[in-house]
Length: 403
Image 1 (cartoon, one colour):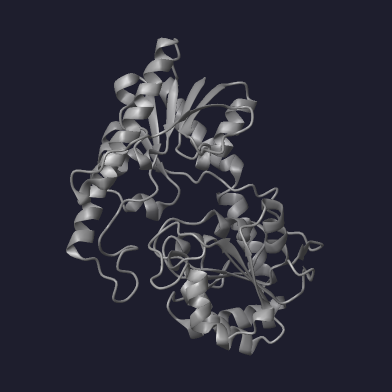
Image 2: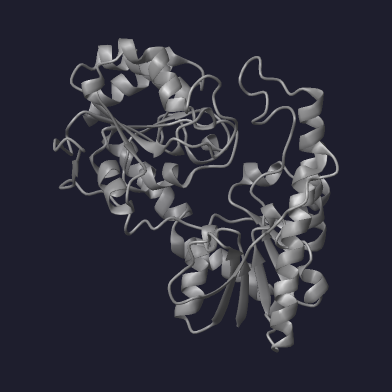
């Protein structure tokens, strides 16, 4: 099979299926932006956007950028077609527009697109924080942003979403096209290890059995509940005087906006609550190498995971796979994967007291939650493992050969 994969940050979510297909002897070609990390052993064609024109209207910024990305990728594909390249199936993350015009280049080739999120001005992430309701301009911008997604939904042959909740956000008219399949977590690598040790930057070491509270996000920002976690941390420290809190994440913004009056959300929240914290027991690591990140999860006594109603983080599933005791916000799609007292301890996103209580219970009575940790891992192994993800993706890709 000749598999063409389009992803701005190739391989992105398609790392496992790309690796599997390449290792099985299939021809895999990736197309990604200039900054895409790539995947060893897989050919990658990079593209670059230069001198992008300004959108004709502020509401249309995403649609205009999408058209530009789609044009550049389509013209790269036209050049490949001249060299007699012809994919059997195309797998795409269409969120930036790369897949918009591939059907104009390869009209008879099956196109499978990943649909992570469909924007809403009410009832999902926007307006989730009290007092942050969408203005008219924001609502209009979000509606216009969905023009890109609607075109992608219309032009693909099949779609896939990582969770049922994320699928449900899309228009009903297109739900018949979208299957639910998570790309998968490496549960063999991300596994419990009672002998694991994590070394802090100052040389201190943490091990299994220590009172270690962990928090992980790609970047420390409100979308992942960093502000709620930090505001609860003084009370958590008061109730758990021996606990060490390790916070992993960068200082940029993946989702939402930068804070006003501060360089980043870490600085802003430390200015707000830092005077009430024992900072010798709070460690910010920045972003960690993958092996070190795994070691940290393996020594964690309680792992806090908070999120707006938004896409589910890989880190939540990886923490469960490592047998962490999850203290998580009862927001979708978290509640699709985690259940209170079954494989996690859940609380209302904005309830600082409930968060502090859940963490204290986890740190004070670890013996009460041994089975819960085991069930957390079982949940991921049975429902979100790499092999399951590959199998589901393969079924979507091979459907074109069965038609």
